[in-house]
Image 1 (cartoon, rainbow, N blue to C red):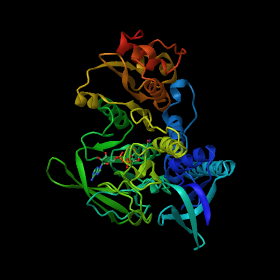
Image 2 (cartoon, rainbow, N blue to C red):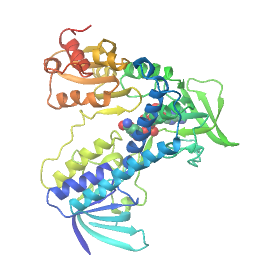
Image 3 (cartoon, rainbow, N blue to C red):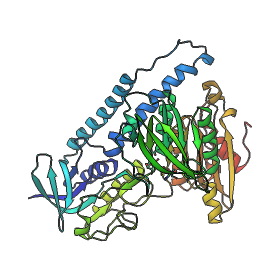
Image 4 (cartoon, rainbow, N blue to C red):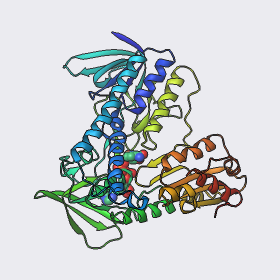
Length: 469
Ligand code: NAI
């Protein structure tokens, strides 16, 4: 029987990063994956392909109405959806091939098949050829990720053509006339805006009375205004109670959360993006005695250890934000813990980015969270309309908001709506990781002219006074 220091089940961003780190730390590592390619949801049907389509559809929108003001006339642009999809596929392929290389480079043994924990320190892999392979593991890391949750209490029959999850919404063969998106969260807005840019009428039906629930309220409101300007329609405070195929399309039925008459709208396609659930099917957790919480997530302690010795869990399958980079950092931390080092993840400083146009990015706490916690804070804000580079780029939508502790100026949160927000947010992340103050950021020389100067100005506004407004 093959023997390993660590067997990682699931090769998404959490699992493969954990495998690499464990190998770097000198351990013998096996990685088990049921897909034919590595990278999990993120690389295969999530973050990476969606970003390829976001980028491509933004190019189309730019060519349609974003270039004349620069004095660039390109004539009427034409969508070649097949080529756009080819770009997406190529991007995914480059990433999955890169992962094969990384596994080889780090001498990680890989097994393609479904892994199951079978007794103490044993993982059985049901290989693609029908045979079983048993791996003996000193340590097991569960990194099996998540799957589409559907709508609680509503039967949704996904055919991934008309009624789709995020996976099908990356593959429409033609642009739907009317796309109804159930859920105004991250997936709904990112993929909804892709298809809106490609020509679909998009209606977002959301239960809460805000989009991007959980994000800073001011940021969410601003983003809704910007998306509405791009043509997306919003039905907020609306609970979807039915999604059904009807003719070539589908119907979506919803009712006001506050009470009132139900409404049904016709759609050519429906994207259901109402969250994801931890994926633990067939893993043998019950038999292994691994405890789950009330929402089916693997229970772990602060070191990502389950209740069973030698079994760890990371990423979407564990409570916390379902973000690839959180899984990656947990993967590193667990590998370090297993190696006897002090593995640690700072959950207070995990950036979140919504890749709409413009982007939304945030790190740390929101104003709502600070109010709820009774923490006195200062707000520094700076709009991109007052940033020279943003004006030159015709990217003046949005603002930067820095929240700092009123008592000691320590930065507690940074929230950005604007072009490049997903890159700029890391200024806030690094600062917060080091416990920095708004003054530290405000006194850090920023190159001119850059969009990042808006981050500096917002910090100045929190600490003292902004200069350029
Ligand atoms: P989400 O949790 O972000 O949003 C789901 C939305 O659906 C919520 O606003 C919820 O109120 C709404 N909803 C639920 N039931 C409803 C009903 N019956 N009627 C109307 N609305 C209803 O989940 P989403 O967008 O599916 O994403 C899943 C996970 O993947 C999230 O944890 C997200 O953070 C992650 N993700 C992250 C990305 C990023 O970091 N850029 C990109 C894509 C996904």
